Length: 109
Image 1 (cartoon, rainbow, N blue to C red):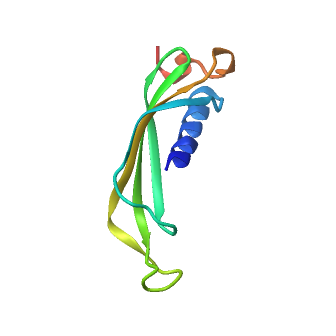
Image 2 (image 1 turned 60 degrees about the horizontal axis):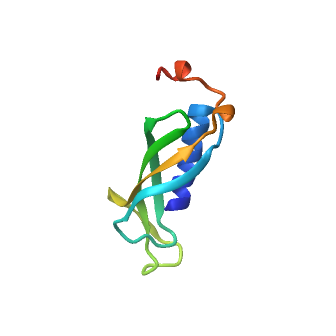
């Protein structure tokens, strides 16, 4: 899950700053349900707060398809409702000299 959240953070930073930045730390991580090989996960994130170089982010991951090894090696099924399996928050940093997009472009500060 954390690797997925790292990928989401990278995309958010590229879209916001034009640079991959660096994931500094997770503030909180909650694993809520088991995930198994063959499950399909949708991970999303958003920037909650922007500092001069820091970006506070939150993430969620939902299981949308589960594997069914009890039926066969490749069996799977779409869940009738997405299942929240993990949520987290953390901080990323993009050094000022690496920020290619401005706050004005983003409609921010």
